[in-house]
Length: 187
View (tube, helix red, strand yellow):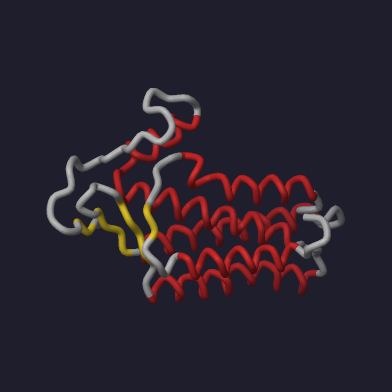
């Protein structure tokens, strides 16, 4: 990410996303809407290289996997702390709660553990791993929220649409039929 330290980029994205989650956001099942930012983070990280320490390949690879798994777990927990509902028009919405902030705080602490272990072991564990963990967090959060709105079908249709599926871009995929009542809270 030339010029700007990766840690600053990760922190900036994390803060913007976390704050945005405290406001109601329309849930999009369009594939591009939920995987683009994680994909950009992964591409930028992989392009930069240096994800593992050449002197300690096995240990650094294990720490990389642990960091990414911690990010994915944070995303799942984050998605389950969000309130998800359906409005009168049939659109799905999600909004983080106080528990969402707690999940973010715990996620940051858990994600910092592999960095601390790497420092203690003398293994280089760069900020690129934090970018991959953030990508995993964002991707799993979006996938779980989509699953909560329409189940696996909505997620699969979303992935299928990204590859020119029969629904086409921008097609609404209501999984539960028409909107009934003011708001329909989901699971």
